[in-house]
Length: 159
Image 1 (cartoon, rainbow, N blue to C red):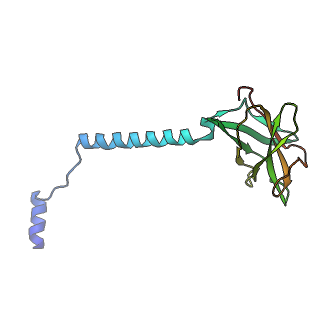
Image 2 (cartoon, rainbow, N blue to C red):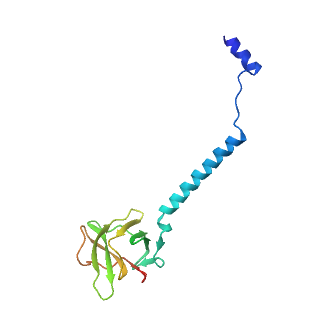
Image 3 (tube, rainbow, N blue to C red):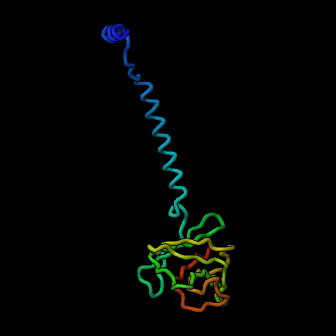
């Protein structure tokens, strides 16, 4: 039996089939389209794909800290980098400053990673808000700031 198989292979009875150029073209086109869709999805989900507020505002007293607001429709997200972790027993709290009014507390509390990166959704809309402010507050937040702002980001007037 083994001799018969060897003789068929030697005679060319069993042949490896090479893919045609047409099937290779279909495979390449499918791979290209799949990669393009994956890249488009990743770019659309990226915070930088959303429109940021007018530039990046630096933190008061913390040269390495940066923050920006990213808008998606009527929602906004504050994205921070280079921030130190808050002291033990404290959390960062987001405040909304309107012209002629005291800073308004929000329930937006957040921490940053050991690399200083973090983000938090800004609650409500920003109509009439002139800046978003971040302070370090006791766990659970505060009804009035207990420390100076570590970040201030101006909100464009069109909001």
